[in-house]
Image (cartoon, rainbow, N blue to C red; front, side, top):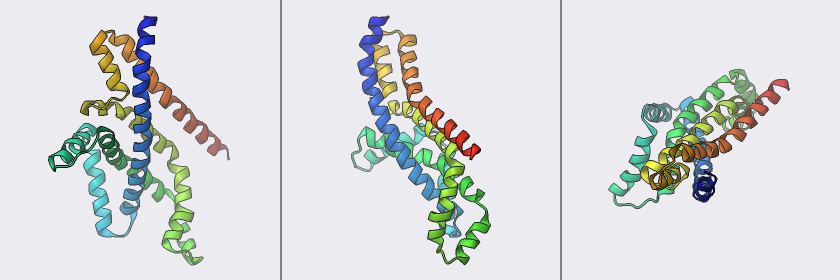
Length: 214
C-alpha cells in the first residue's frame, strides 16, 4: 500500500495544483460577479434589479454541471474555441456568483438605512456612500457565509472532471481506472481536498470569534 500511495502522489499533486488554480480563479470571478449582481439587485434601477434577480434565480435553480456543459459545448457550438480551464473558471464563476450575490445582498440590506441618509447629509455621493460606508460593513457581515460558499466552490471543482479537465478528482479517477484500489485512491483525494478546505474553514472561524470579541 505504501508503494501505491508513493506512486500515486505525483499525479494527485499535479491534479491538486490544477484544482488550486481553478479554485482561486473561480473564487475571484464568482465574488466579483456576485457583488455586481447584489448591487444591481438592491439598486433602485428596475431593469438592473430584474436582470440580477433573473440571473440569481436561474442559476440557483439549475445544476452546476449543466452550467459547465453549456459553457464548454455551447461556445464550441457557436464556432469558438475555449480550453477546459477557461470553461471551468467561467462556469463555476457564473454558477457560484448567483449564490454569492444572495450573500452580499443580505449583507447590504443588513446595514441600517439611516447610515445612508447620514452619509448623504454629509455630502457623500451614492457611490462614495457605498464604497466608504456600506461595503466595509457588509464585508464584516458576509465573511463567514461568503467563505462557506468559497468552500462549496472548491468542492464543486471536482465536477469539472466531467468535461475532461485533469484536476484532482479526474486524476484520482484515472488512477483507479488503471490500477484499481478505489478506497485508497479516493481516500487520498478526500484528504487533499480536506487539506485545502480545512485551513480556510479554521481561518474564518478564528476571524468570526475575534470579531465577536471586539
